[in-house]
Each structure stands twice: as structure tokens, then as C-alpha cells.
Image 1: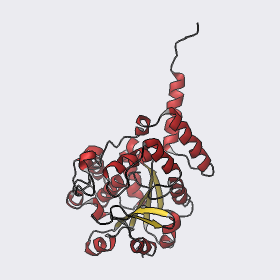
Image 2: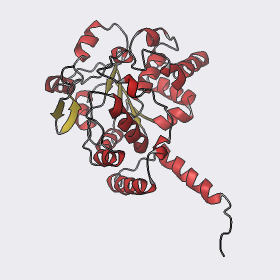
Image 3: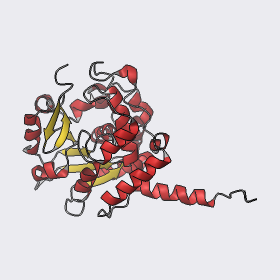
Image 4: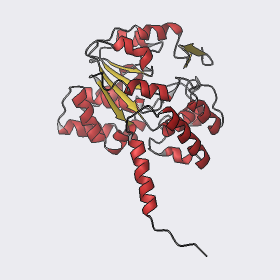
Length: 308
């Protein structure tokens, strides 16, 4: 398969050459957004496919027809990828739903002055790196993953494809006070209260939904429903692109999966880097609150007196 082993470096960031060229990336930076556009922004493995599904259902008011007949990469294509212009030319889906992994410092200028609705999805970076590690095992357009500790180190250094998670999240969430058309929502928000998250997103998109329509969205956007939907689970892709024999794209979808990969030593190392890089970021993150609650709960568990 052409360019599977190629990496494009664009503004110091690596991108898979199978999906990107210098031209496709440059075109993304000059894209003329329309005020009716919906833009999904994520760092990889933060809930991109899930958000594509949710937005599809909100726009269709809970009707599963589009979700079950059009692949997610055709109904919410990636702006910076090679095939984007051809998909856009053929698509008659309205409003346009556009997905991107680009950081704000690259895409922000193109969005300036636009009323396009932007949804930024973030996720616990520990779960992000674990999911990304597993994805490297099955996606043939990524280099083969190292051991997990080595992979984690490259993630923390911003040396993986798509660049630094820290720069990405700080760049986009730093616009919350100035971009009225930007909604920040977390993977954890959606996991803990999908019904409420869908209501929040429909309000942001100015697409009011009836309770029955919200319930249909919740039903069809569950992990089990998406895992069984070939338009969302990537089983339509050929083996030379995604090696389905090595694992499933829809792996488990659970929050807190990082605990199955991180040793105590790796966790301490991660926390030290995280705190140093995020010290200038004032956002409260759902996963941090969850960790605090878990710690408090563990501290309240009576312990046996083992003193001699």
C-alpha cells in the first residue's frame, strides 16, 4: 500500500504519510469554513469516532439511517487528510461535519471570524496513550510500537505522530474564553452521563431534540451499538491498512483502562511530567476529580492494624 511507511513532517509535527501530504495539510490551513459547519477537534484516541457518531445522530435527530449507511470517515471527514476534497465534493450531507486533529496554532487562523460550531473533545491522557499504543499495533500506517514504557516516554516528549498532547489541549482549551462557538467536553463526561452530554451538545449546536430523540441518540451511540456498526468500527478497511487479526479498533471504550498498563513507577513518572507541563493550565479536568474521589474513598477504608 502506497506511503504506509512514510511520515510527513509539517510545522515540526509528524503525520502518517498514507493519509497526509504537504499539500493536504497546507490546504487545511486555508480552508474556507462556513458559518453552518460543525467542527470536531480531538487529539487522537480521545473519543473522535464516538463524537462523530454522536454529532451524526444529533444532526439526524436520532434517526440511524445515515449512521448505518455512510462510513464515519465520509460523513465527518478529516480536514487535513488526502481524501477530504473528494469526499466534500460528493457529499450532500448538511450541515457539514468536519473532523480534525490539527492543533489550534495551525488551524485557529482559518477559524477566526467564522461562526462554525467547534466541539473539542479531551480525555485522560493516560487512557489516551494506552489506546494509542494499542492502535499502533493494528494500524499499518503507524510505525511499530516500542515497549509501552518507551512509547509513553515518546508521548510525553511529544514525539509521536500528531505531536504533543500537552500543546494540543492547552492550545484549544485556551480559547474557551475568547471563542463563543467552542464547546469543550470530555470523554469522561460522555462516559458518565451520555444523556446529559448529548443535551449539552445539541444546545451548543442549536439543534433542539425531543426526549425521545435524545434517547435514540444514547441507544445508538453506546459502545456496544457502535462496535456492531460496520460504518463506525473500521472493519470496512482492508487488512493492509488495519490488521483486524491483531485486535479490534473498538477495543473496550472504558475509562481508567490505563491502570492495566501503568506500573506505580510509570504513574509517578507520568504525574511529574504532567504537573510540570500543565502548571500554567487552570482547567479542572474530570479525570483529576475522579482520582481525588478514588483516593479519598481508599483512605476511608478501615485498615487492619498490622503492628507487632
